[in-house]
Picture 1: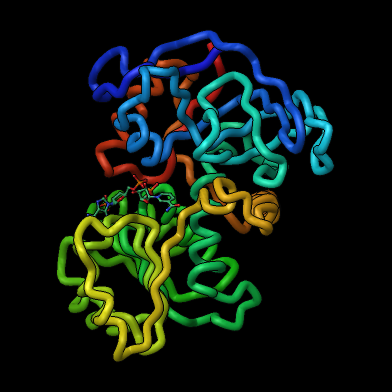
Picture 2 (picture 1 turned 90 degrees about the vertical axis):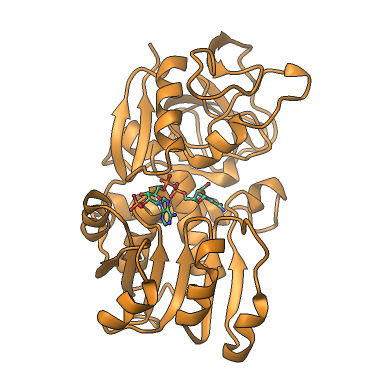
Length: 338
Ligand SMILES: NC(=O)c1ccc[n+]([C@@H]2O[C@H](COP(=O)([O-])OP(=O)(O)OC[C@H]3O[C@@H](n4cnc5c(N)ncnc54)[C@H](OP(=O)(O)O)[C@@H]3O)[C@@H](O)[C@H]2O)c1
């Protein structure tokens, strides 16, 4: 089968950062399904892992977002049949989706939305899992509307994760959503996904919140390097408020700043369930199925900004270069093998 891989970590501007390769097609066993991959998308995690040194220059196939068709099922599979169209992010410890065929555990896949293409579907899984878990599992926001009207601040929300987090917070939780964005295009994108207010993360956040009448917020979801925002976040979080980040701290943080407000803090890492094979791993099937239904009934809209064809090493390298700039709006997808 065709795949796109690399044998060493190369800068994205080098023409052979990725290679078109041919590798053996895997076989489904246990709870794995074998998916014929029709479309993939690229996330910042791909660019971060691409830069890591390879042990022994072994072939590495990245990619953690795909949509395709089930071609084989393992003997333990109960949730899917051959011929089903699915979407999934997969597991960070397994070979990725930048290949014509990929194995994925059935518990972390779901039937794709029927009303949108494979390309549109491939944009969604990784960011939807992240946003859903951050909002409803880590921040503990109610999915039955009892937190309606509470206010969330999402920092860096025009990218892949923010594009779906805004929609889930709006449609499911009915929150008042304040996002940050620094450019007209990213600001307009946040508003078009459902943000109630957009402020600029490169200007004083506390002052801007004061101006729009929300000096303090119930929740903060940080979608970018949190270190530079930590003091501001601890200032603007309400007493007993909740903070979640999906990005590491790049310097030491003073957690004592949370004490007098009894504010709580959590990390979200969307591969936790799959890499640790947690007992509730099939929650990922549940949330992706819910999101697919919401797409099909028009409650959620696409997060795709750009679709590139075909899926090959050169196009993948160009999309990595765009994502690596850190200024993506929405999602970038590759669809169809040459
Ligand atoms: N923990 C997890 O499970 C998990 C899952 C997914 C992603 N992530 C991580 O979360 C981050 C965001 O992912 P993504 O897919 O949304 O990324 P993305 O699509 O690349 O995000 C791009 C957006 O980031 C904004 N941005 C850039 N620099 C910023 C800054 N200094 N302050 C605030 N916003 C800034 C930009 O907004 P403007 O153009 O408006 O400035 C741009 O629209 C990445 O680091 C990614 O690796 C973690």
